[in-house]
Length: 272
Ligand SMILES: Cc1cc2nc3c(=O)[nH]c(=O)nc-3n(C[C@H](O)[C@H](O)[C@H](O)COP(=O)(O)O)c2cc1C
Image (cartoon, rainbow, N blue to C red; front, side):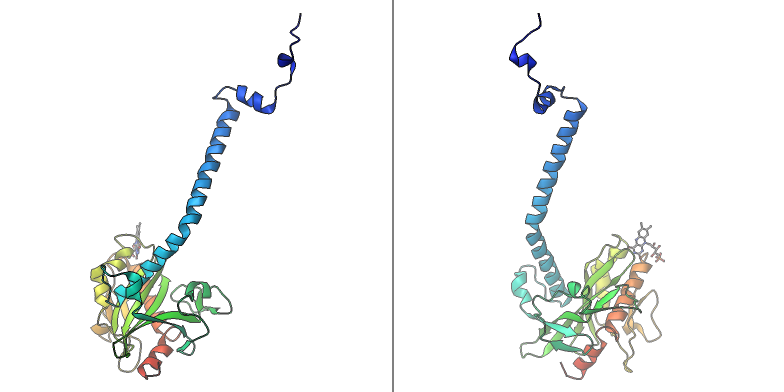
């Protein structure tokens, strides 16, 4: 006689059927894999979201250290935020070469501005390989104790071999003598293009001049010195011709008429 007990007759629910499957069955293996993936992605997402403010703060700190370094006033024992207060940020209108109060210099985002069609323009002649250029840039002034401009720190960027290099050039108050150049972000090859970060190469920039007596832009990164003279020449990095060419292009672009030339002539005329 057939077993009539309710437990053996009741149809098994989905959960029960699943529980009864062998541990190494395909549905159970898939279930464990999917659950693990979901759990891991949840942890990664939570970590990414919660760490973002710290990452942004670190990026800002790194950029500030770079500005302090390029201006030659970085002291590792000093608090970066406090040391950075020595700089006066200003938003520069590249077309007029004058500062503008239309934006808050402390928060103005140059990179976001270069993507905003109302604040930027698309470049047809684009030697630095940047596509769009913001009409406004945040620059930093370092003043002497009596309030005179000591150095101007100008952001520059342009394409190397693999990446866009972002950095700063520090100029003396005459707007022509270079104090330093350094990059805070790029993805060039370590040991080759990334030698732009080598202190010995960076030191080559100190004391070089942008323009000759006629006001012609002469600064050049190349394997050999230009006819204009050694004071306008920075040696290209050995084995990294393309990164060097990228740096040459970006410096010429930003120091030229599409970049800071109008501001620099205003600076030289004492109109800043
Ligand atoms: C894996 C790899 C990575 C490279 N990275 C760079 C680089 O970051 N910057 C660069 O200018 N050249 C880089 N090069 C070298 C260039 O392809 C090119 O050979 C070099 O710029 C020529 O320089 P030279 O004439 O001074 O030898 C790399 C080459 C290889 C194989």
